[in-house]
Length: 318
Length: 308
Image (cartoon, rainbow over all chains, first blue to last red; front, top):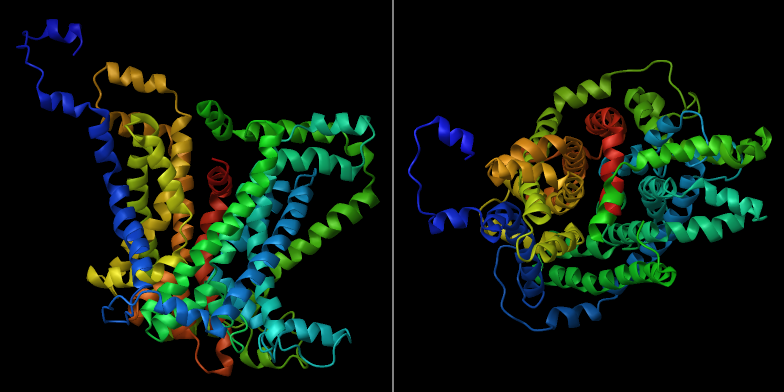
């Protein structure tokens, strides 16, 4: 209500400021309304199920039947189940091997893309494509590439005279493990590479020039300039990478369904099998809940392990 | 302190990047001779690009190869075909429910994305600009929600969906996908909103605009790039989602493309590969086209969310 407006029109009666008027501009009141839609979704479909999951793991619930409280029975049962421990082993193997290789290749690719290249933008766009295409659909392509009879990889290797027989990619225990790990790496490298590239582009080239003048080798330039400046972003990227690899479900489910003889069952696929396919909701929930400590541990390691360097340098976060 | 950091993170780093490129080309690149670059740069890059792209080539090739060439690798060269056929694609489009699945995916992705963007815009604005009591804590909680993976949630969520009476309806997906999308897009939009000068808002407040008007007329038009980024990324995440769709939907005509391909299209037939690959190819095309138009937004969404 500016003065100009008031003088132009017949003067309005000045109204008492009511409690309602005060409420309408109250930050907390407005904030609560603005937060309402997001909070509703997250509480109803995230926080509540998360709590419910922990509760279910202490019951003997089945599909379509509420369970009763049975204490730690599910956990005791699982701790005697060799398949459960196999799935834990597989998950740890899958996560550690895939994450380390994804990081190595991703960083290497980021360094390559940071060079002065023709068609740089186009190449960067192409690199990201495996990340855009839905995992399930690319997993199906890998399923076909790893076919026991008609695999093009076996065909090529046979043609070159390197092998005599087709490789049984998904039928043999260790072959299957390496095959799914390969597919996971293939899918994860673009994400790591592109995010690290964004970090690399913020490193000032004058630092490299100064180091070169001081006689630093390529390796020293990487070790003492690139790596320290990149650590914060590496920490974040690797935390996410570990998180998504650890809880992976799609790739395994499409390519092997946990087989052969449970050799590629991750905890996520195993919990799906127990809870949804066999109907033992309580047990499945116990497996999911058992993932949480592992998950927190993995996140802690990659987060704090890499963040510590940042504190040592006392630098700020960019 | 945090504001300075946020500004640094969200302000176009492209400017810095371009400087870096310009510097680099005049700087030390004269130290590298062409043969050296060939071995240390182009060769490894070529190999990596080949591995990254080969599955797509194979997918495309398989979907247009006639059946007999697919399985007979000795008479015909497996790497190329001189007699492409549209048989697999027509079979997919007219003999299966593929168009329905495509439509379902599109519908679910669009609705879930719209809902999430709406909720995230409000939440991000409230956290960044209203600064109500507990705003920082709320921001932290939303980030934590981002770290909760769907594969831990799907078992209890299936009973919840059942309790709410949503089981085996598209609403089961439309209402659960936002739990994956809201944390991400809120976090992304918070970064964008922080870069909008506070003075603009103060002016509007002086002129008597309500918070709602400020959001609609001032903040949102300035945050369009952020909105596009959030929209594209959410859409891609929806399209990619698998485990909820697999668990909550059992009627074939409600399925989304990824689930339908795995459950309904995979039959015992030896000749299934052509139509499977065609299905995978057509299922990824919409995303790839969308991506081709908005590469920059996509990259900034991905790196922005990580950097914040």
